[in-house]
Image 1 (tube, rainbow, N blue to C red):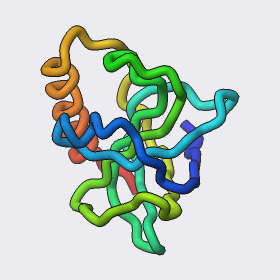
Image 2 (spheres, one colour):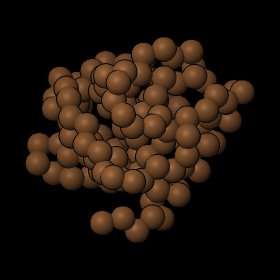
Image 3 (cartoon, rainbow, N blue to C red):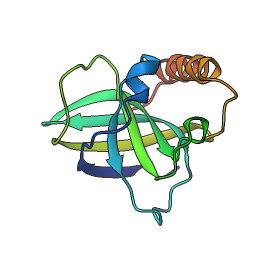
Image 4 (cartoon, one colour):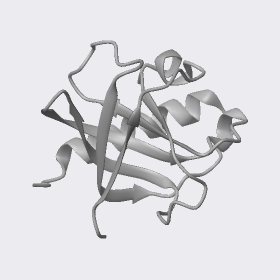
Length: 123
């Protein structure tokens, strides 16, 4: 996969990631962005510092989402990001976006995605 960079100002979301135990920084993306929806190993850059991260690009079908957006959970990071510029590089697609039957199933899959991403050797 060719690496894709998405940059923007962090917006308020529905706070569902926080409720699931995986707070995310939300960026709007154009509907015509030519990148497949799904979960990605990513790298987030905040104020010149780079962090490992996982990102979901899509519409959140499990929780009734409609707007396409990029949601990024930054590992080992807890500063407020609303209104700040965030640069996210999508490194490797882990899986496609899909609908889960329950919030518990979604949470378990996100935890599994996190473990998989942390075990990847990506430069």
